[in-house]
Image 1 (cartoon, rainbow, N blue to C red):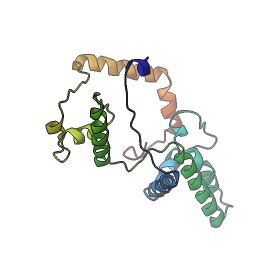
Image 2 (image 1 turned 90 degrees about the horizontal axis):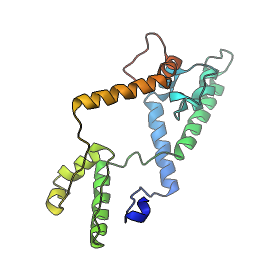
Image 3 (image 1 turned 30 degrees about the vertical axis):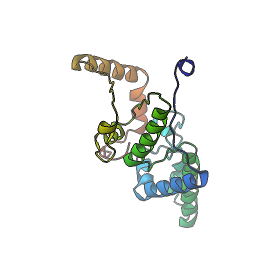
Amino acid sequence: MFKYKYDSCFIWIDVEQSVLNRRVDMRVDQMVKAGLVDEVRQIFIPDADYTKGIRQSIGVPEMDRYLREETNIDGDDESKKMILQASISSIKRNTREIEPHSDFTTEDFCLQAIIYIEKILKTQRVPIIVGGSNSYIEKLVEDPVFMFKYKYDSCFIWIDVEQSVLKRRVDMRVDQMVKAGLVDEVRQIFIPDADYTKGI
């Protein structure tokens, strides 16, 4: 009933596909330089099930063929290089389908929010800003550049709960995750003496 009960405004990032594609390609190249291959190598298991858990993450199944070829002592370096490039291209292609604007900064958010707030106010309606990331909302409200607190009367609504209640909810949630297969999921990527300060 939401659409029938309320006037609403939806805000999203609009960008030409060619621009988005370039940004995605750049982002994947940065991830590869930062150690994506090594990160996936740490959890690589031949014949793993890529339909469950973190193995579904973009970047993991695409590296399967390369990591198999890497262990093949008969494979030459040139063919391995070609397979790696093909794997990276697959990551880029699959990322384009879901990648949000990764360089959409807090400043970008604030500028867009102010534009739409003004547009909505001109129609004599009430703009509602819904989080999301706390850092974006904090930037909008607290940064003196955007004058939010001086320009607008505002009301903040959030969930307030006692620590004891929160702890019970967290305990319940973890118990549900364990029942749903958390241990098996972690077992799939378990490597003794792995570096737990990096990656997933």
